[in-house]
Image (cartoon, rainbow, N blue to C red; front, side):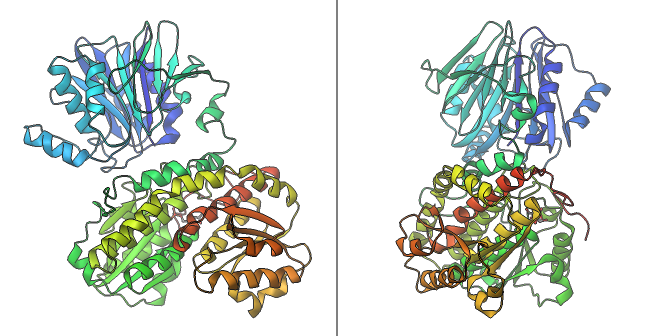
Length: 614
Ligand code: AGP
């Protein structure tokens, strides 16, 4: 998720672009850059770090006056956040500049093609190849719009591209596939943005582009085509939001926006990581296949929500790879003097990549010569930098302190790791792995269906807004989901909430059950040996003692109905993947309950987004 701005009009493009980037900085802040068209040349500056670094650089080395320009704030996916990888990227001769949001799946093949043709690519990004390809087209005589169309037809994946051509200062051209892009329509000027926050101080007339469309903006107007050059229509609308709402895409909280972003985030986490045959391709796993075949133990470390992701991962990884897999709270890990060898793989899960407890854990593992693989959402952060390998979750910036899309994409990354290990070690046949990959590819749609039921969940929050305690029960992979649901409620609503393995109830916690106590019950899919029936028994036990049961179960699971005061229907998915969808209603419940209680959902009391102290 990056911030993108494009402008052509009568104002100083630098002012419009920099201000637009400031309003989009929440979308990414690894680096920022700008390109201006001036006197048949492109003047550009780009710096790692926050927008302020770029502004300081421009103050020291002013850019020329221009009324056509593009800009970018980056959330790194390919390539560390440094000056070289910052956008904009230029073509071979510096005639074309491009900024990009998204992931180009086939960039490696296109990069090889360009390098074989003599192009020298300077960055590690997937974006730079588009600047070279578009420039080749305009040098061969195409106008910038045609060049964009021709190149987009060759790209696979998700992208918003915005380009300028130094020989054609009158226009800015953009294209989108599976990534947001809106046009701001002004008087004698027009704007491009990754969302309306980029331009609503100038105009509230917007045009949303459809899938596989190219837009050309000039001072005089806006024209839209498809990738083949046929005329097309965008969706015209008036923006009613204020700026704060625009940054949250109209949601009241970043957390709620991020809950609803989860289908896209899951899709991005999967993008480019398997081929059409379901064969896994984890380029960032820089541990050799031979070393992976020698792994004889896995220890997953993390804190809070990340630890619960590890607990889910254990079920999947052990089932698919038959490698013993332990899960350890990062802050406990090194004090228990763990048994680590060169054949131990320590997996560190961290959204921020800066959690001190987790960082200290991997430093201990590295000292003991274990292999370390990070699962992280923040490109270039400390934990992946100090690890042997990384799987980035590609969730985009997670602003809400309570992790939501960070968690679901951690699950997806853990599944990908487990399947990759099974593929490398041959513990599952290719068709078995492909079957799970196909199920994973369905997850965005399944999460969409659960989100469509949000109003029911909000009604539950209204019903329980005065409750003083809530319990969460789950079995197998549903147990960590119960723990995560309880954590969300604690950190957002500040009320007592506790997650239990359902089988543990009769060993003590059932004494907590009293009349009217709300208990969320995560029921595993049917057909999985006795798991489902034992969960139903647990629900019967608590209901017989007065609990108010809120049952999350497959939508056609009639066995639970007699014991459910409230039903939350879930799409049918494999047991190991159910945490991806079962967590969503619990996120929605906590977010809504905290909102009703008047709490600051994005910045809950006493909490920080990244706990950088031990
Ligand atoms: C989750 O909602 C919390 N914000 C917290 O448990 C968080 O998951 C934990 O601090 C780990 O953070 P990390 O993923 O950035 O390492």
